[in-house]
Image (cartoon, rainbow, N blue to C red; front, side, top):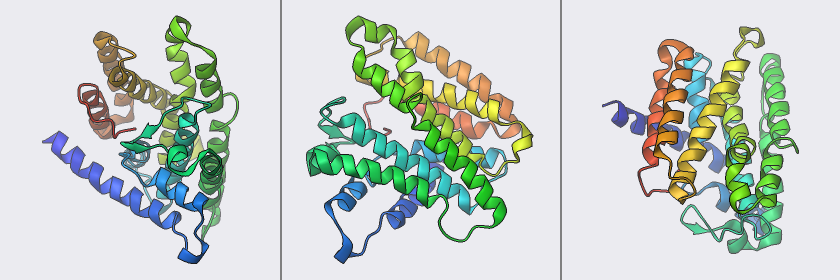
Length: 277
């Protein structure tokens, strides 16, 4: 029953995200360009929007969900999609396929794909502050904008990608957890903070949000590695799931909103569906 309810909510939240992203990426036909089309192609695919989902559920736990939560959640997804464009490039992971269809650089060419990635990051940052916002909303979203941009610096996502490129073979496998921590975890932490964007700064949530985002991100990456065949340690995966489940209990009586998501992620390790990426 709980799994059925989660999947139902997942569909609703995904549609909420997809509709918003569709509007955000809409362009009048006369102004359409290859870069704009490639942005839509990269974002409006088959992904299950797990990071926005995590943001919404965090907001619900904290009783902070509002219209502007969608802005922050969508910004995280735009950055995620930009990072996938870059990851797939021939000079990076050289992946010809993404979400069951040709990668953005295969469909549109490398130069256009690179420009699309830059444009998505700019859109993520800009869209946070556009439109009518009162002073309280503006201050909260500016704080989140700074966090979003810091997630992209050379000590976070970019550091993880650089390490992934530098290391090979057994050396890479020994450092896989560190690569994941830098390359995957920051966007899950950012998603947690997207859900808490309007929580009072003095409430003391930052540490728990970072810790939960870290462990959820690591669980996600372990599932991904398991599906790729890079990791076959079911015991380690089960341990990470249990440890993460214990951690999110600190969110109190609404922690089930995150536990449902953890069970969904963990179950993915034993399926063949890759559309969660």
